[in-house]
Image 1 (cartoon, helix red, strand yellow):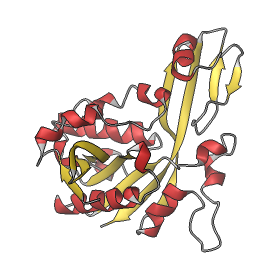
Image 2 (image 1 turned 135 degrees about the horizontal axis):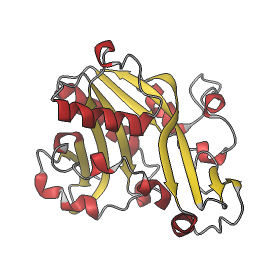
Image 3 (image 1 turned 90 degrees about the vertical axis):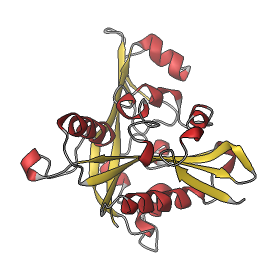
Image 4 (image 1 turned 135 degrees about the vertical axis):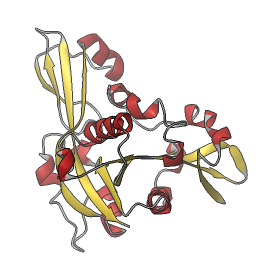
Length: 250
């Protein structure tokens, strides 16, 4: 494969291919209410931070995509640390920065997605490196990421604070996606305990997951990192997903 990578700022004609991309995420994750602050403008306001990749032999179908967002940090803004609400928090910060006309100081990675039939082929590391280069090209030295560890869903009852301490014999994280970040120079900063919050009625959760949601309490949902909290009495369920902040100095 001859891989070609470009931003939508350079190739706005490829924006329609984003809608056709074979999205690998579970359905319930598509209903985080904060996400649209970014994704609704990924091809316009944030075109320079949206990277798309394709095989030179097949330019009509993407093989991968990458999303990032610039934001401001600083004690004068009350932002001396990365937010505990991770993904949701940094997108909200960036939205406020844009409204206030603030100059961003950092870039946050949001997503690297690989076409499902090409997962495990090394494209994730390639796209992460292009993400780093893109931030450097725009003059930034700090790239952070509210990482969603790729195998945490296999241990939904294990606290994230314990999961991130699981290491291989070579000293690298046991989790493949965390390991990739650390291997290229990323530093694990802290856990963000509520990186993403998704709530819905029981009917919505049934539609998103195909599960019955008939009893109150914690329910394990495939590919969720934590159990989903269910209240039959109040007809709602809430999922609070943790993440891990990783910092790349570039």
